[in-house]
Length: 604
Image (cartoon, rainbow, N blue to C red):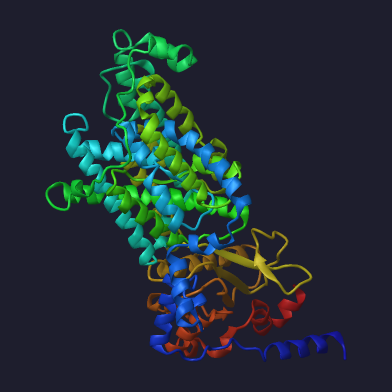
């Protein structure tokens, strides 16, 4: 048998392989499967399968309180690591908590309260071994900014505090609800790039706010944008700056002797109940709800990102929905025990990790140290200068400015960098809320752009192979004469169906002009490679029908290759497969090319 006969024989065998049509699915089963994959992708009930009732009860308790699972293998070696880590993060959290409470316009003890009760709740319910719980700079600033727009924190101190507890309560409810309803994927809409810009902007805003304490300025702006802050700073340069506090903040020398403005007395004792201080009715209820939802989502995003980061370092998994329930529960309880919104702190979690923590017991150790501090040591804090607290906060938030990460975002994805830069500029030049809004808006815009304007590509044959690839990625790939091969890299929905049709026709128009100028064979076949097309809707089918009619007028045949099971099923149901002919749907591009133009395919 000669080479041509062998080639023809092989092509004949290849033509026996057709695109499979999936069996008809029961509508209820298909809907159930889709819901399960959306909300229960991790199959949380799998451990309960085929287990006796007593075992299911134990597993249920462990699901809500993971400490009863990992606690069985707890030993002295792990405790030693947790003890050292807990003491280390406690030494860091105490001065930070006092400073962060000032960012939220609350008395210093409320920062300490928030590092006492919430970490205990999280230790029992959280699934991360490394995350350290407490107040954080970004959420403290966000709360201080949003709450102070509703109530003056100095003129109406009691009402302001009640609104803070109300916002914390609804932040916890929001977090727990997302976990119970398996809606954790919603926080993924805030992209990593946007978070980088948001946190960098927040860091600068926080640092600028500390100029009041660092420079000893009494009359300082309540606005957070850089223009208002710098105007306030330079407006007080001749009569508002205090050289003693500047000296203390910069040098840390002899600050107890020369400090003029110091922290007020910190109330001694552990968290008092605040259940009766939460607004469950009245004009502040909706305001507390709004602020709580925003603060809860930001806190949740930060905590889950931190938990996933350190979990990947130690090669273990955390349950995102359990994390949300745990964080929500601790903030609900916290709102009833004089705490404001707590979450995972990146700086403390990093210290916790580096100190050798083994489990969430390190949070318990930290909480115990904070308890002792509240009971016995708080009177000593009244000698701590504001300048020192300002320096501590500036030092703590400096790590939030991650320039290498921003540069990497620029190199990888320019649109991501726009989200990063937009969030940064929004926070610095306007407010935390505006920065957050810009971050979410740009992230959604990116999603919409990718959905409504999917990528398409012209394919060519890679030499000495039967593989067809993007000619831009593989310049050596050769176009088959008389055939245009286009790949669509996205599902075809109502939002992009018209664009996909018009883009394919523009590719065809460009190719016709090229072959005419080069005196090459005219285009007789248009092959649409549909491997990346995961789904198609009614509008998508209609667009393909319009494309087919347009091609018929040009005497060009439309051919499809390798549609997936969902797409193939819809092509059959809509009778589009019959419209173009089932013999025009192939398993691979190579099969389609061989069938349409075997001579040209062999030559290529």
